Image (cartoon, rainbow, N blue to C red; front, side, top):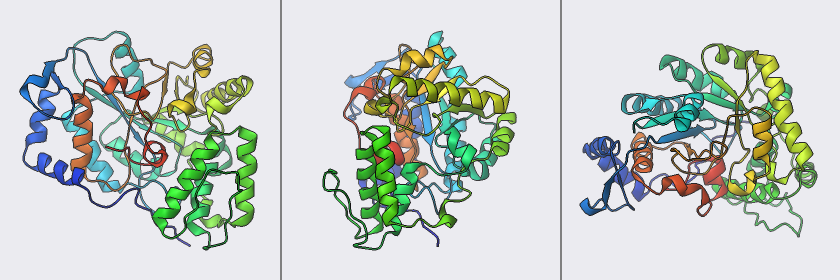
Length: 379
């Protein structure tokens, strides 16, 4: 059985058309140069809304899976599109590592823009598809690893839910009556959205309850092993990438929602994932990614433990730009989803640098979970 990728949104919309026109006419190139010294309120590019900015600003790109087919079904990005994006960023922006970014936030100098590149969830495509591109362009990317997924080779619980809803025959799946989720299996995209609703609900319950809920779903749907095997990084692959300049960060042991864990478990997840990664690489692990990464998933209690265990940064999935004054344990990112054009990617990136409110974006209204956690963020 082969599970083809499911588009996260309709194939074409007005934003893509607008971005194509701005990119192809050279307007975007002009705006990118202007954004190095100016910002503009809102989206209306009027002269009286422009204002100078003198601080460095940083956008952190967040990728999940590069390539197509199989788990994860929520995310896909063709390798040639990924390379085009990397080539564009290298041409237009300064590339920094997360380590360099946090140092420059601590001691800002000048106002040059910069971009950092990150990957979540430890999918094997990070090695098979992304790593050759990163090595070709000498990109100091950071990969955040769910340690137990590498140890066991098993995909995480949310990937299993996405897969279950893609393969479940119509009428074969029932949800408990007390779940606030609507089940729609009429199309692949409807199934994707149904899975997203289930996962969003389960992110908000205690860890043990979530585990029992996942077991309940899998008793109704038999997941094909062919779709689950060989999807995660191995230690050897991770070690090879690390020796080639790819930084390694932690995304906990089990990709559990940090805010829903008792403090003793939060500490175990942070401490033991870091310790095991350091044993495997022989180098310190200083950076962390919150699983799912929206404000309700992160909470506030983990910050002290992150500092105590020697983490220097923690990244979220909140959309925004980072600058002097940004909390290093609440760094914002731009999620890059699947199948989109280079023109739209370039427009979204430049628009963030132009927006003076983007540094406060993390406290604004959350986007859809598929958009913010599993695919391309809403525009």
